[in-house]
Length: 550
Ligand SMILES: Nc1ncnc2c1ncn2[C@@H]1O[C@H](COP(=O)(O)OP(=O)(O)OP(=O)(O)O)[C@@H](O)[C@H]1O
Image (cartoon, rainbow, N blue to C red):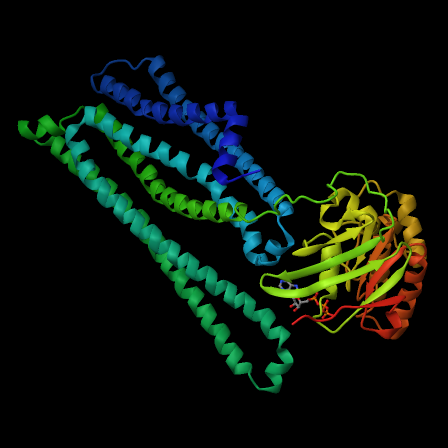
């Protein structure tokens, strides 16, 4: 499936038509209705200055319209937030779907931090595009134009003053915002340097003391704090200057217009003349026009960073996916009878990462129930053989077979029940001890879990934990050897026909290694086992040499 940000947003709008209509009504409604209360106010004041009675209808209308403006604005914010969250949800789901479809090769080339920021920061900027970007910008632009239009009909002179003043005001707002943003970025950098400095110091504390580098470290920390302080000063300066400038400008415009409207000159009065009620309405409008103008600057900023976020997300969506390849046995075909073939077979396999060939014309067979060890110098390609068996990569030439099926074509849901993979160290998932073994697979019953733990000799240890199999897993719950036993239990729980063991005792002492190997012996019974091990003690069965190809 071809996804990109644009497509996902369009689909979200299609799925939430009512919400989209609600947003349009709330945005337009808020703009139009907010124009009315000052006009009603003007009528009331004019009536009062002419010593007429202000009817209750006018008062009720004024408060009603003010309340309705509030309702419309609150609805707009609410609808936009919900819509933004729907976009976020759709984007994150699509990103995760894409993530699961990526080849092991393109995943390897990703920088983890950058990948995380696609899912978190970049998606947030796209959400902001809707909650405080395009739509708010449209609403603010409409608001400024409509206020100017109403002022034009009320007092042409003031409208002209504002036409001249607004571009300058906008420029000033952007100038302040850009400088504040730059200062905030500078401050964030300085703060992250300062906070990174503390763990770095602790990590290297012995070296620092040994080499008498205390003063140097202190000086560096001082520099970071100073940088942060200067950046904060700048932000505070712009923050402190902006509001008074706007307020003074507001007051100056009102004062000038009032003075001109009070002048006796008929020429001036054709442009600036107005009643007391209109004067109040106009003052109200002037103060209303500054808020959207200020927001407009921030919205431009939001849209700019959202565009960069959209580009980065689309780059991720464009990453290559595995091309559908014609396999002799398709993914959903039933396991073909071996027909005399071996259980595991490498047939004249040549494979390399990019230009670098690792395996050249490699052929070997492993019979069902046989236990073999892959042996070879470091970098010869032993783990690469596993990656091909696991279907993470496909051979450039030749083919890899497991139980009559081409390895890369084995359906994902079948894999766990066909082979179990144990690595050098255990990778913990969030959850209980049981979750570590099942990996949340409901097809693995509690009976399977206990059987696997008993086989590895971990059952009693687990039963002594506060909540047994339901104990939440934390790093200190087991020793390194016990984690490795749990790793074997995880592989064995699905009762796979094939076990792949990659240097599983490499990090263990001789005593623990013995314990793990004994557990392994029990688990390996009646199973095909392919292992990689440099340790003589851990080598099992026939040795298949993997030679380095230069
Ligand atoms: N994802 C990868 N991208 C590019 N090159 C890789 C990748 N993985 C491994 N290699 C290279 O392939 C070669 C074989 O690596 P492999 O890990 O299969 O060797 P090994 O025999 O298992 O080594 P060791 O015994 O040290 O674990 C090495 O030169 C390695 O640098």
